[in-house]
Length: 331
Image (tube, rainbow, N blue to C red; front, side, top):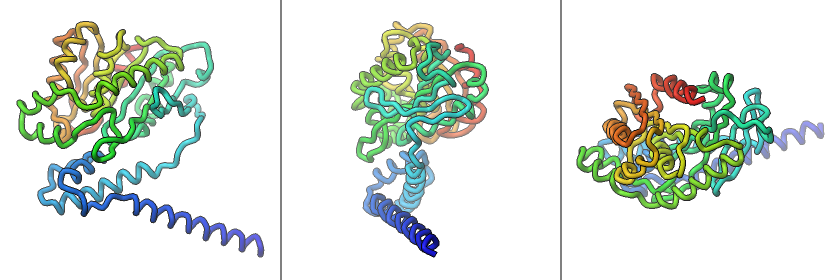
């Protein structure tokens, strides 16, 4: 009887904890009624949603509530232990240049003398987390990981900016949306501007790459820098900032930035291999931007593998396999 009573008390305590946690989440949630139209749009974009079909402010509020629910679901995932093992290898949490990272290594590589064949570093998008691509080694790239020894690094960007969204440097999402709607001239001017925080991000990310190569025991020319959206822009910019050439760059639904700087730096990185994919219905970063990026890189001597799909701001099902084949061709 005492054990049953203790069990009931334990269940009541668990339910109470759940209610307290739920109340805390509700208190932490931003009241969409107090947000401006610009802030509502930024919140929607930070969750990876589109507001293109929102006509009235009430529509934006409804979509913003949906964005909050999506962000809360992502944040509600239980933190993983510092070291996890599976048949595919070992995952551990590491801090590199101040970035909290998840490192996945091939089975037996932790502390082993043999270096992996490749280190693929994936930078997430604006407002996202490093867990977005954590399943790539066991899912999308599962066959590659079975035949080659591939290590994976998933860094986490810190929150900042007016909306407190995670970002590698300060990205004005509304400015990009407005430039895309205004047309080619506005977008062409925007991709020549240097965004706030980019210089600082470059130095820190360079240190992260250096620390990662030492930790894994691999040379820079065996490193792939990949990214989605803002992460794609950052990966390409970082590759051009490094002293030597990486194995390749993968830009997924990205866009060029600081194009004049890129054009000058490409002279030191002739022959760099770049995979570009973009959705033809992308409402966040216009499809045309990927074509401009391809032209810029090819004019600078890069070897570009260019793929499109019919979707929006996403990896795209038809370009997933070519991406894995691109990586496989590097080892």
